[in-house]
Length: 253
Image (tube, rainbow, N blue to C red; front, side, top):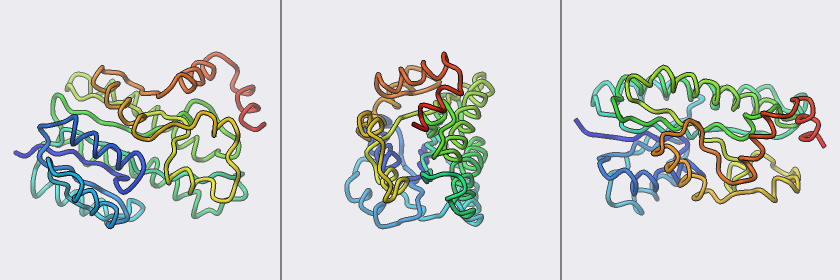
């Protein structure tokens, strides 16, 4: 039975960075299944990573048939899924009534539904010692005007991950919610489009590889939540202490 890892959002940003980290930090992996819409960037991964086979699944997780293809591959091969990284995500900045319904539901479909379905599909193939990385965000710590649906979707991921972690504890499968602040990735550019990124977010913007490296270290330490950097850790603490209404006003300012 071959041991694999499955990574969604594998074509860019933190999903791509995770594949490099897994290839380095999980030496017993025989294959990494890379899932993303764009095949070309993933093909580059195959050229750059030589110590483990990178298997490509060019799929759009907003499409129903994508889950059928992943399920079929799992059923046919019955691998040992040692690691699942739910890295696919969509973020669109703007007031609720300024974003189209398609864009709004697309965020929910990928950030919540796809993550939940991937977890459901892969979990039967995991065993003791398995690790699930769920991409949440520091946006999960508090509602965010101008990023309302995205922040709400990430709050779902954080809540789901914490509960699932407790449910899987006896099986020896660990769940870590990865909650970074702003990260220098293609995702951030798409999220804001032509809008100006706030001075605060530019100030605390983190390096992608460092965020992922921190997540892997935190998971190996058994942490439930991985938060990179002092500023984001302080933000999480503030969101726990102060009334939510005050926090929302800060994000709106």
